[in-house]
Image (cartoon, rainbow, N blue to C red):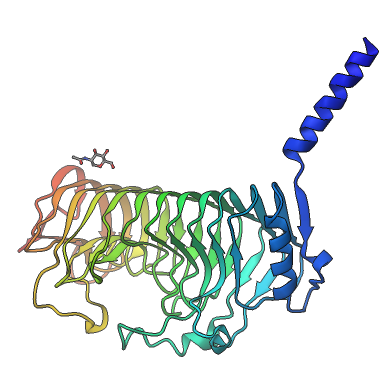
Length: 393
Ligand SMILES: *[C@@H]1O[C@H](CO)[C@@H](O)[C@H](O)[C@H]1NC(C)=O
């Protein structure tokens, strides 16, 4: 009896050890010290961790310098990147030698990025070199963190600060959850989008806290099945689908849900933007629900004549077809009279647009809030403040 029990215990322990043991790769063991450059140490720790099944790279509290670096998969098994300290990028963008990122994670399955540590992009000097408002083909400054072709993964609790360009960029990701991340940059820092999603599916962003100089979240072409829950946004340009239609061969956008959340002092609320004179494209099944607006300019906006800084040709209307869109229970205050603007394309009018329970007050001088409808006939229900389609063309 006793012998049997011990055999059972031993095999159970063995089973536990073989299934749940995670090997830890502390950057310290690879020579990474606070206040020093840990690019090499961290690269070595990652390479070692990636080669075993079930591993965790740890960067403990402290401030570290880190040059441009790629963490590449595929790895042997699940891998965690745990950041408790602060990583600082070189402030000089020339040291990136034209690379468009500071840190990238590429081609990894079952990745967890965790810890409440900070990716500090040190963007202050690079922002002054940003000329994207003058040249549409501007030089790309480094993105703080790129996730390229990451699947079945979680990013949680990390902080991204003062990126030189976008903070977090997803490309070709599938089944990725982003939970409770904090992203900050000054309201006047150029192109510092919080999270940009492109050509990815099954993406969930929950409880993010984002304040930057551009879109808090932007959703580019080829994004499908994206859910954004309870985002706090501001300062910034709001939550945006697009811009779409700038380039040839863009892929459809569909299945976007923005649920809950609060936007404060942003230059837009929830918006869909497409360029005029665009190639054909589609954006459908986009739903915005239960969002609070505090002093937001343009809280609800479809803009199919998007043309920042005059960088477009206005010769033809946008050919990106927008359909099955709803704005439901969007409440709060607008900082401009233009609380609701649905400006759709003359060549492909918006279809199946629902506006329900909208209550957006404008408290400034010069009359009450307005709602503009162009090339769209929305289905209305519930409260309509401003009265729907007060301005039609
Ligand atoms: C509209 O979008 C919703 C949510 O994505 C989807 O379930 C529904 O089937 C779509 N309706 C049509 C008519 O395509």
